[in-house]
Length: 565
Ligand SMILES: *[C@@H]1O[C@H](CO)[C@@H](O)[C@H](O)[C@H]1NC(C)=O
Ligand SMILES: *[C@@H]1O[C@H](CO)[C@@H](O)[C@H](O)[C@H]1NC(C)=O
Ligand SMILES: *[C@@H]1O[C@H](CO)[C@@H](O)[C@H](O)[C@H]1NC(C)=O
Ligand SMILES: [Zn+2]
Image 1 (cartoon, rainbow, N blue to C red):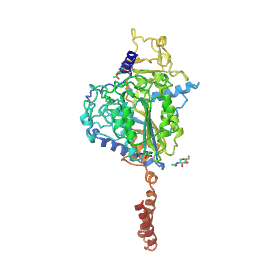
Image 2 (cartoon, protein in one colour):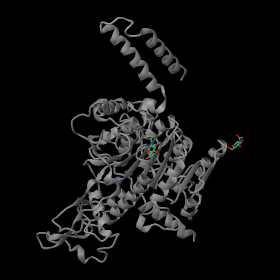
Image 3 (cartoon, rainbow, N blue to C red):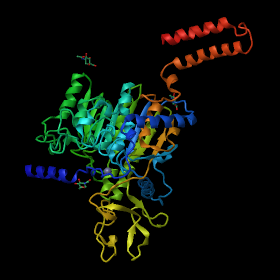
Image 4 (cartoon, rainbow, N blue to C red):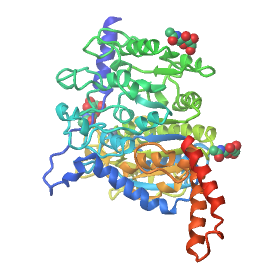
């Protein structure tokens, strides 16, 4: 039994993880040094918002903010998933529509990071959650911090706040939901500041921060630091980063922490100390038992590492993304001031990295279901929903297939040697097959051809398929959705969300003052009274025409009310 467990945990270590490759060496023209500061990206966004807001006449305010992040959900992934959705319904498919494709605004964003043309999930998370671009592999810090440079990452001026910080400061509640480890790059962008995305759980002393006192691992930041410890809902995978390497989790797999800390216990203790209700759950039934009367704080860790692909998930133990997002919305909706929620379909990316196109599309459809649940639950006039991706992938949608051809099948055309090829194929990855005298192998003769987990073919042989550097889409619905149209820097996304929701240090939408206090209409009335008076006065009439005493009295009363309020 014990050796079986040991073997299982070894297996997890070997195949369960996909750290992104190191940043490439650079020998191009110098990078503009201004980009190393947070202000550069903040100003870039604020200037763009100011410009775009001229066409924004929306008076609603986004009380609630939800960002749905499809990790690696490229435009090709969206198009192919839409077709798969239609074909699963027995139709030709091309005419089908994903739920979020019906959103009224569509934009495109540039995903490059300061030192890298093609980014990873951590520098992009810093962009779409903190509004600042940083270096490849870093989280919540400016580009003044080089990857793995602990010292510069603790300098206050190099650390940036996230939209979760802004929401909490405005009295809103915050939650994160993901199918990856909750300490993985994308969700960690909402709460962690780390010179390396790999410092997840103090698991490997050689690789992790050499200074665990100053450069605290990401799991500990979630449990013991702000803003993570204030998050009302945390749901996903990643128990191993919370448990000591000598402790077995509920499913008989060891933790990976080398410091002996049990962060699930520390999370509980913090809630006890603060006298708030809480629950820790590890399986689907326990999560469901919280649906009707959820506690104030909920931590759910449903797998030792990442949650399983939807098609491989154990229905007994793993909830769906939709179920997790559902309970998160129930919990966060209790706050009258609203909430910020991050929901990630995190394994679209992992399926692509393995050239498993069918799985990537299935994960995208699961993601879309979660968006639909949220869209149907949350009113359009007070909830801004943004659906986007962090970066692209290199899956191509190619050939000249006939209408209604299986999107996960072969192209209607054959190659120059009369060998079939797939409508979806990759430029890089493990799916590269050996060619004999320049002739491709016939993939349709492979034993697993047509199965869900079958590996699609690739051109350049690589252990892991790579990200793509092309733009990704932003779909928006709700107050100020028009602000998301256009083509812009990915780091503008949280600034626009903050604008629509009247939070954060930047520009706020016109409706903000009137929505948050009665000052705005009163100020407007006082201003009108004064200007009417002045206009009449300089319009050549006498002070009597202006009826000065009445205007002065009205203005004085309004100003006193404003001061009292
Ligand atoms: C590629 O995938 C393998 C196996 O899944 C993994 O061990 C490795 O860390 C990955 N490498 C990179 C550079 O992503
Ligand atoms: C803890 O909270 C409960 C219910 O909210 C309250 O009745 C109790 O007085 C609190 N205890 C302390 C020590 O604050
Ligand atoms: C939003 O719309 C609903 C009805 O559709 C209405 O009851 C509610 O008052 C509206 N809320 C705001 C903030 O306008
Ligand atoms: Zn990736």
